[in-house]
Image 1 (cartoon, rainbow, N blue to C red):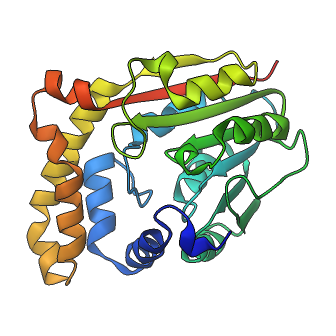
Image 2 (image 1 turned 180 degrees about the horizontal axis):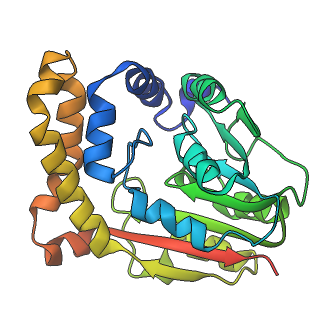
Image 3 (image 1 turned 120 degrees about the horizontal axis):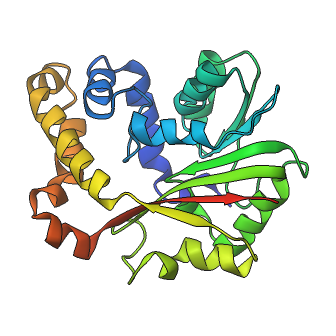
Length: 254
């Protein structure tokens, strides 16, 4: 498949070019999310720190970040654990940055969900933070991830409804839950919709506080994007819940 045909491909090429050169955007990420992972989504440092709770207790850990972007989240986990980090993303700009930033104990590749492959039993953890939506066949891709994991390995996924994925009735009716069940995978879920709502408000406040900086840097379009992304948090929480939901899925390969 041509990359230009993929979901948001051109937009993400521009995004990762901006995030590499901008002096304002890292400030925004720190202010909104607690750490600069070049976020274009909903993962703050508290969500990423949850990953650490599920890492296997062993000397050498191999972590795969699915849709790794410029590698900053994987790099943060490596800093915390000394793990060997792997990642793939369809963005050339993102992967080149990841290779530059994290050259030690790492393997970053250009790759497309559903097309890239790894040897079986390669990883102790596979992480997908707001990237599983890009799978053309989620059932098939979940099966692929499961094959990449070692026995005792963990699949950790941040999953949002109400933007790319349509809002469903409840967590068990989500496309991800259905794909896990079709693969015979037992999972547990943490509902973080309330956290997401508060984070979106914080994200909006951080953007507004840096409005002048974005304008002076000639990055008004990125400021406008952030304001647009967070309009949903201007509604009361009861209304927000009708339109959006956010979950963390965790599954262990026994």
